[in-house]
Image 1: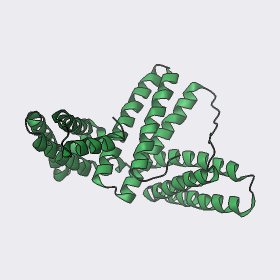
Image 2 (image 1 turned 90 degrees about the horizontal axis):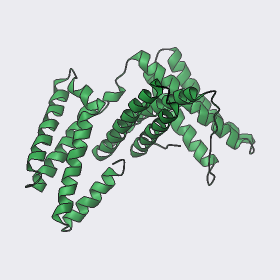
Image 3 (image 1 turned 90 degrees about the vertical axis):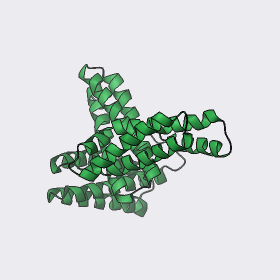
Image 4 (image 1 turned 30 degrees about the vertical axis):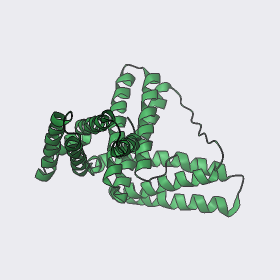
Amino acid sequence: MCAGFAVASAALAQTAAAGGSEGARRALVLQKLKLVEQLLDAPGARRSAESGDAATRESIDRARALLDEGRRIADTDFAGAENRADAALRLVAGATRGAGSKVGDDDLRRRNVEVREQTLVYRNAVAKALEPRGGSATSGALASLDRLIAQADADTAAARHADAQRSLARAYRAAVAALAEARAGETVTIELAFASPSEEYAYERRRSRSHELLVDTVVLERAPPAAARVAIDREVSLARGLRARADEQAAIAEHGAAIRLMEQAVGHLARALRAAGAPVF
């Protein structure tokens, strides 16, 4: 399952509501219970379970209890099991909200560097796309991007890393939107040259981390509804799992496999960004 989970669940729910088969109703309930299980096993929920905040820990504990209850009655009480699954999903989404964004200044600064690097890749692609047009179209689009990047640089120099994070997130989204507009109707490719597979893997890993930081930022800025948060958390969890597997492959010099896994991780994070309402290139 991926970001289409919410759509598939909605379709199953409509089928059941319209008098669909008992098998379809059971499949919907089991699907939701499985998603609760996966979210509770994700890093965000584990961090929440170890949180110093009693209410957060209680939410995770209650979600686990609801999962157990839902499993016990899933075969005999579809409505009751689904109600418990829905309640557990709301608890997990609330408990993990912002968990991935609570990082120290040093880590945030390093992650900002990665986002800045990715933003510059897109910024340079915008410049290349607008080059034949010249004039105000080029200067206006790039000047706006450069102001945001400069603001992020100023925030970083003043150790305002959270402010820099927000500026970079806006710059990233502006760069993606500008590139999409500049290349409307065209197939866009951004060519990068790497000296070795390990260098390419390092780039893909930075891209993955920058996308994850952007997910954190967009979620904090836009506060998407609970249904979207479930899809977002699901995609981030899958991305982290793929990144861990990619790191294992890179550690034994299997960089080709590691790169493919990391590209899949970036794909999941891109879906998370779209679910949060952010443009993604």
